[in-house]
Image (cartoon, rainbow, N blue to C red; front, side):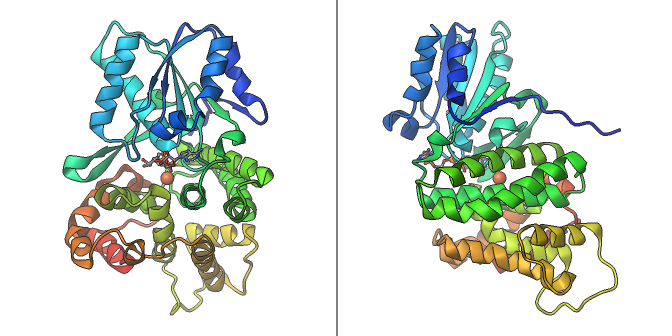
Length: 382
Ligand SMILES: NC(=O)c1ccc[n+]([C@@H]2O[C@H](COP(=O)([O-])OP(=O)(O)OC[C@H]3O[C@@H](n4cnc5c(N)ncnc54)[C@H](O)[C@@H]3O)[C@@H](O)[C@H]2O)c1
Ligand SMILES: [Fe+2]
């Protein structure tokens, strides 16, 4: 038996933030990163809470790739303020932090009643506003821990592209490639279904048309609105179908070398497409291909990359990923990312490969990888 539902209510488009003025709560904890507060963006939330006569406090101690320690600080803040609603405004790091903080707070104090959670993304990337995942870092062990539970799902999400206007081009590039990776991995996941496929196809189509436009022109409101929706669609897709080793391996690169999540995913994409499909520049056409390889070809066609046969079409898809990265000035390899020496990188490969193999996303990869395969992929990535 299969099951599909969307628990999170989604408010989107112009004036969608006005939903906050209608809320029936008494006390809010606003969770964000320091940028959201310093830039004044948080006023989009607090002015509306004022309209709704809701008191608020702000916890702005979120940092990228949120570590366990910051989650504990957030738990103390929410228990102290006894919020009946948590409002997360920020990128995936702020939203993931809020999800984890809400769950841990409830477990830490049995008298604290489950607060509502509203997620307001300010990047178009993670789709965290509609997923049951929260990725927390364990800096001591250099790993990322993806938590997965339906109780992490936000109750409401608000998608207002006004909030993404200020995103710098490099973050637009990273987060946009994260959207594409979510859509692609969910599309070929062993757990995919017709609902997730429909959501992923639309996210891929929008990303193909609008990511580069968003990157090239911050003021292209139409392109930004489209990418904000694509991010949420891709989140809904992988929330039901899950992901694959592209994410398992990216999680380790984030934890070990602080490579931004979307950038790590983008660098891996061409390697993972070729690995999963057993297609590279030496490949000759075969008579039959597994379903996921034909799906890669469908994705290529959705992007307008129709080619002579399945080998050239799948290769066109992996070339398209590199083309997008070059156009958006992204590094194509770990050496180009300039985050560590070659020795430091190769020393970490065995531990990263082991952690990637155990990562929850590996279970639904269309090809079952061995530890050696993952080590080989990390080696290629240098
Ligand atoms: N829960 C999920 O389903 C899921 C999925 C994918 C990734 N993730 C996690 O999400 C995190 C990455 O999130 P992200 O890519 O959104 O980045 P982020 O939240 O870490 O933010 C990146 C940077 O962009 C800045 N920023 C955010 N919004 C801005 C704006 N409107 N204007 C200017 N600057 C802005 C932030 O201050 C930060 O410096 C990682 O920890 C990753 O593991 C979670
Ligand atoms: Fe992601």
